Image 1 (cartoon, rainbow, N blue to C red):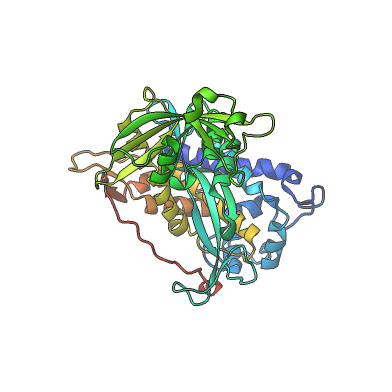
Image 2 (cartoon, one colour; image 1 turned 90 degrees about the horizontal axis):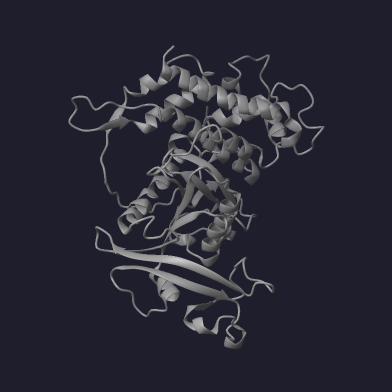
Length: 441
């Protein structure tokens, strides 16, 4: 047996082993410990978790038939599946995702950084006008209205794996809060983590939480934010400077503890969340590096970071922020290649289960795909495996029970040329929620 087959079998056995470990102590992942998952069922704890991961886009009945190999004696009913999944604690599937990721090292950038992208992604769910937190009224986009949940995941850019996720009702989304929760939950690794995010995450609280957690950040900011940080009316075309800010909740100069640094003070309104100022700590010092540079299209971008000039040059910052786009392309694969847009439930909690389960399937696939290297040989261009096709092969491999076929070599039959620095215009299109009527099979 060659090394590639050994590797894919190891990855498969790792996932199976993690599920078995959870199954052996199911009470820790049950809503009612000591009662749930104690009786012998056709759809026990192990098969429930595995089914959630590999479940396809057909209707639930047919997916169950496929999973149990068309065996009518072993086949549970759809209601049994719903009853079993309702016994799972909300964080059970999240635990499995973290357990699986723990077996494989994160990707390393230039031998010293783990690059972690943070961004929001929305999913349309079953239409329910009675849920004001997720429902949007009819508009020019849709005559019926729609419901939506907002997710904010952490994504390892180099290894192409999802690490964690926050769920929020779309009407009440708070990306600042989600970012802070994710950073606080992130466990320190051997290399320094650099959280890379778009301008929707530029806030004092996000900066402070990252610094206090011992991590680094690279966050894009609007001009208006940079002007406020630097107390400028207009911005120069190019900028690479430090801003040493003292944050306070009061405008009274008499209450300021460092009167000689009056220009460094920035007032934080009481309506704005900032977790590091209280009665015992009335001020918080925040040291930022602010960089402004010109893009190829002639526009200017602002980057806020706590990476020093010695740690990261302006050109490297540009490269880091450009790499953030990979989380956007991962959403495309998660939604369309994996099929995360097509849910098997109306419940928001169950939808959350399915999203994390699909992320585990995504991680399983990308971990195997990482071993598929296409040699350039005599070709004019450098090639890579067709990621979409490779992912479908991994999914089919897991659904078939992880048989001994060499899917890594099979991936090399489906390749595409690498087109560096290719740019596509973002398409703003409304995608209506997928009706349950699509599940004819």
